[in-house]
Image (tube, rainbow, N blue to C red; front, side, top):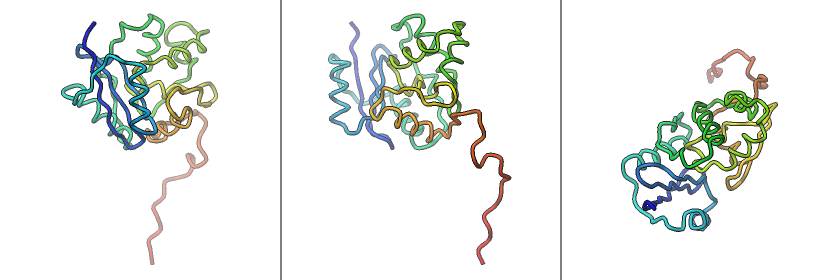
Length: 191
């Protein structure tokens, strides 16, 4: 078995982690409320991983995730993930999720349509709940029908999902927002 490594790092919304082996990510961990909680979860998921400082693609990923959580539009889909370690169905779902740009969303049903299995919306949700690389494979960008959030397995659940979507300034519905139809206007000049 390949040597596994991990790195914990702080972001604007909590402590995250990346886990890798042989030049590819084998896991990622969304923000936890504190470092101790993040370490306990890591120890359960990857008990063989040793902690190291990030270099190369890992350092690039850390910088990208931090920037994303600070409100920059960052596309992390180019980062190397070990897609061959998941089932064919999950791989197809994750490949569609990887194609969703920051600030945009799809529904579980739309993902099911794109993988050629229109009746599989519920199975898409299950696959996204099993995503080993959350934030790199942006499962948070997939919503339930009608703009409903659907589930989210990170610490904080749906609130964390909405927080990330808000940071990305993502629209969660095709319906116009309360202020979307208003014309742009400058602030009135101070007198």
